Image (cartoon, rainbow, N blue to C red; front, side):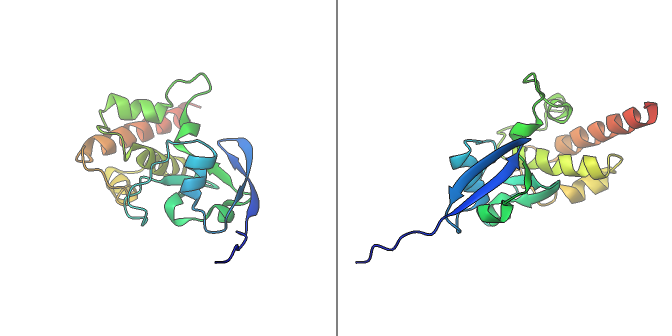
Length: 168
């Protein structure tokens, strides 16, 4: 029996606008670091193979499966989780409200990943068509809604964003 000392690495990253640090083993997944160490449990872990999309977060503005990313890979990065979507006063963000208004969630397990995927899409292409939205969310599995209400919510939000851009 050997007493091998576990190697650890200190990491610092910005999560939802706040600088956070931790000490992790090199093999620790980013999803586990977010949920266990940072106590941000909105990022869900489903399949742990990158298939379901429930663990989707944004790293430097790009959607990433946190269950396929090591925490050490996020060193110095800007991370956005579903908790970061809330308004400062605790109210739902416009996208979250659109999901609520369109009944685009049922059990809610897939919702954080879908919201983060939609956030990236709407930032890069607010005028995305329904087909573009279907394509963007095709990597996020939902067993409850049938997807149409999710597509409606994202399309509605994109339409509002375009209207705001035109009026500005």
